[in-house]
Image (cartoon, rainbow, N blue to C red; front, side):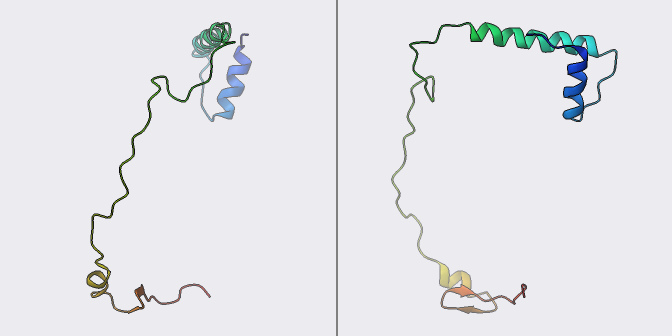
Length: 95
């Protein structure tokens, strides 16, 4: 598959990019080279290969969910202008 200069112009317009006419041949050549690489990848035999999420078969180790801080709600709310039942009271802003 190859693309033409018109296709590059259209892609540039959709991407909101300005492409000068003297840049067009180089962009077309680079784009076609990238598409050729994709065609080479498509030709690789992958019939018996299982999909994988990580090429290293790594697993993420999780830490234990342990509370390490004490409850400081009363101390933090002591400087608030208004609180009630552990909640901050603020003026109503939505009618």
